Image (tube, rainbow, N blue to C red; front, side, top):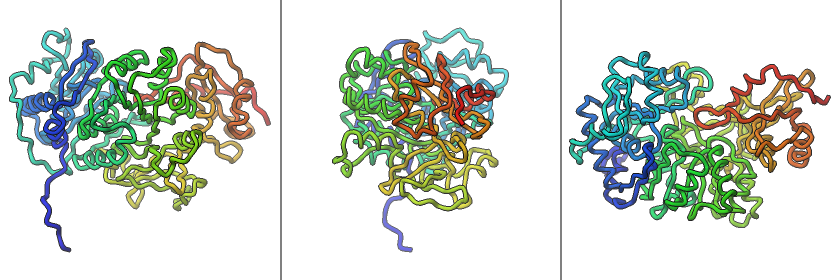
Length: 548
């Protein structure tokens, strides 16, 4: 082998904040704080404070490989932790506060966290868990001295006091790029949450992959970007790394994620691009309808986490001029796997044809390979018709879970591909379309019904705010679809209304056998509709409107 004559420099997360502070030094980071005020500073300011925090962590005895936990909203202090912890070679473990108490206890103990940084909002949660957490765990509250709460936490430290006397410069250690950098646990819909342990190398390569579609989703130096997706959810879909690298203004929403609060923040800060889950966008869209306009400059939305209804895409694009991109990914994929950025080859398509493509989950991101596999384990063609389990492989995809061999073996194929649990089609042009989760497909009379497609069709009804489809037992057909829906302003609908609306949108035999209207749907810790909860809630459901 003839080696190239190139310098061998490790791919490290610290290089991103160094670059942002050097090249994009005056770009702003704006945070809606837990205390209620707006905090503003620049990437250069953030670099100085990150250095102070890193020096403070070292004084607390944090060493390479130690896990440092966070339980916090999207804000500037949480952002600083992302870089300070990883920069000194420790592992930043972001905890989802929406997990059940037992799950939070599990992940802190399983990760062997040394320190936990807590937003004031979440102090009461942790106080109730202290007796089941490590005895030597250090608690730091993310606030100023004057805002320190009266708490029963043992020997709590104040974040601002902790860093105030530290040097604002640092020489980052020259780490191995394959060293662990970050730890996120899956939401644990079945069994205990599973740990996804990222490396510096995987984070950097994933970030570079995101830059291949950056301009199509508003990630440019002149843009303003709002990560509504939480920093505690799968690295906020890579935005804490990609946005500083392109030098865009970064806006953090804190805890105020309702439609009116987001609209106000986006309008005031002139947010151009925002990323989040469909349930969040339903609230924002309702506020846009109310005000009969979009926030000024708002031009790009990336929606992921669950399928985006066609009706939402149509309304945002046609009525408000917002370019919607649909994304797919998993915590295990760092997490972005594909996006519906269309490209020049689709510019001749009609509006409806483009919307159709945007209801898919899009084409794979650079660094991600995709294939679909049948029940017999054989590879299926990418012809847009065949569907099977979606499997992925790439530079930023797990090869197993953190200290969980049983789950690791179950997740991986013998030839090293990750089983996603999703059922998909892939077109010859590379567009991936999710048919369903393997556990959510409905098998009626030996034929498959996609709950996702049926949900998307029903979601277009003008009086349906949110809905889900699950299977329920049927004495003749085995399983039939049950639609569970929330209506706008308590509008009264019945099954006949639903059938009339869906008649020209899905096959007749796909029509739900019944509909149940509820005040709200249950959601998982990551904002998805919890079908596991619905299946348990309706496990004894018997159809009253079955047709033979």
